[in-house]
Image: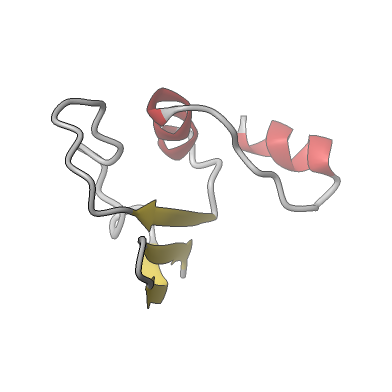
Length: 80
């Protein structure tokens, strides 16, 4: 699918919309080069874990940007 996403986009950026399952599936097939996470200090109680069992460093991701704001902390991870 990684080749398919790249081919469809003609080399342009592709934004993935969807929930946790969609992002996890794209990570598992190596279809993501950069991730922007916005972490908000809200306790929801239950939900899906985005990164459980996924070794981002092993996949080549590093934190390239970290920006705390009043409402969220923005973290950008990219493949090195």
